[in-house]
Image 1 (cartoon, rainbow, N blue to C red):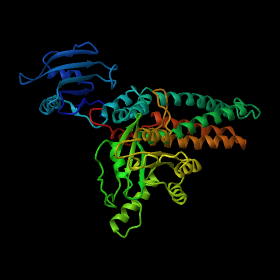
Image 2 (tube, rainbow, N blue to C red; image 1 turned 180 degrees about the vertical axis):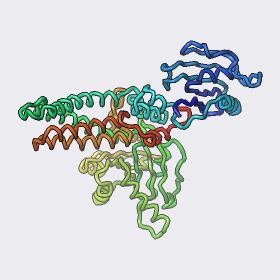
Image 3 (tube, helix red, strand yellow; image 1 turned 135 degrees about the vertical axis):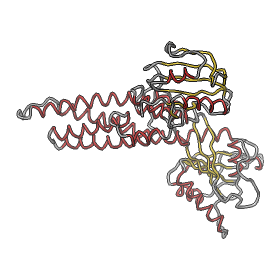
Image 4 (spheres, rainbow, N blue to C red; image 1 turned 45 degrees about the vertical axis):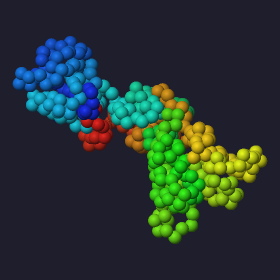
Length: 458
């Protein structure tokens, strides 16, 4: 019930400080009933020092922040109790609040109320969860842009143009008796519809980048057995994550972990060595290697000697056009005069337009250059707070449907269809774009699905 007063911990239990959030019509009155002084006459946006009390005994020394509707996160009267982070204290305060009439909040219910009370649109509400879950600079900037209304602003401009066109077309319908009367110039309508469709398409295309940033860019480390793949993974992770051994076929399954390079998360997958084997378990590991190659955006091919042209052709066919970086490992064991500029290695790299590096996973030589090469191979544009990048599958689906409606408008204009048919597809486009910000979403099922993924207390 939207009229319920809800409460929940807004911070994890066990820290030095804990915060309990309360929101609803009775938030200030209920908080006041367990506080050592009267909060009912508190000025908006003020902090009060005192104690949480139960049966006349102090439970904890606290600071209480009081907010009056509509000037709060949820748009309702709200209170935040800052106490010590002890599990006992937090649970005791929550127990007292429930006894006085509060209900424990559902996951995401505070943000859901903020949306329902008009404090933010749905795309901004979803950005709250993304901001909390951000793990690197790029995902933080992406979520921050969305929270500040980046997507909403872009869509507002598109919707305003679409509304104008739709209104003019629908106005023509009111004067349908006058066949020669046109309120909307068809050439201008066509040009504007093309521009809007281009904008929608570009936003949809950014979903690939958004997903890569959100989930991490997959990088497969492949090669024959004992070329140093696991040693390389450990060197990149700065940790002994994978078992390293001189025994062939040590790695029999994929091993995955992430690192942050220049603010971008990369998911490195160490794979089983490629070779002919009769070992059933190792065969399964090799099959998973090929699966990892299929899913990877970047493939690091580790070798310990210069490859032949046929070997290079084989790996190029396996990666099917993915970005390939060839890594010649174990340079620490090479003779001093082995780094010749005219080596077959360099000629092959130039011939097949792939990047080649010489490193020592054992000593760390060349690792910094490799990280730079991996970052550049990802080809991710610099993300700022002003950039609009789509990372939500729901938003991508809505943009894709809007593009389909706009394509029907463009096709309809080419075939000189009547205004009523064009207006209908424009209206469907408007409704679809409204799904992103929440203008057309009303069912509890859809809202529940979105906010269920939030943490309790937010």
